[in-house]
Length: 337
Image (cartoon, rainbow, N blue to C red; front, side, top):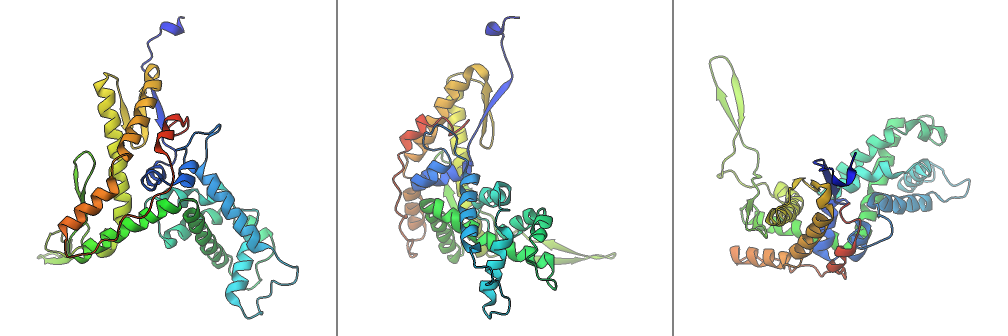
């Protein structure tokens, strides 16, 4: 009866926009990447998945451009033929859903093989549309062609991401390089978050022990500090784990400030919850905390820490940053929304 005085206890949530890429863009001061994930103010929310999709569609259309008679499998250049065939089969069929999972998992270090599998799953849903183009040679297996198309599209999608998030991509590559250097010292990657939480990556090579009993033999996985570290897993896992440690830091900084002000707060990853009457204040707090977090010399501190731990190893300097002004996050309506 009286909505103005009704005490609501429903949680209202505000979500980040492809939050992992937001953190990468902030680390690298990546202007164009930051624009795609709403670190900059705009009249409408930017959709990074659509942004990448538009670039991919443009590349596919350009690759598909042809004269009527030039799609000849006997021309001798098999790679060029396969590329053009895939482009023509996919032209007009690429949409946001096809690239979304690859964009989403790029922050977790998705590989080319992983991206190909993700895209292949989406293309299999479009198999009838692909076949309807009538370009698949009679003797060719449709499943094989779809896999070729997925390979073609995975390359373009990953390249488009690299173009959109250039400084962020350099940061990702640099983090992987740091972990590789540490693993060559025979040590797991370890670091301390801006809130002082120590983190150690546990990834070691697989080691098995066979235990024989009266009834059977069993294989047990050994997890022991005497087992050598897995350089490959240390290197591939560090960039996403480092970003996870920073997004959790942002969440905790927001939680501490909400608690200091006596405001109820809950969160799941990058989904922040509060009561309806506190949404405006929470939005201000989470933006201020994000700016405060990335005003620190996070990468320089990591570089200095590693150099002190392993004085005999050479660690390349932190990559140059872009021109993104973090203070503009305060005015970005769609940063979290």
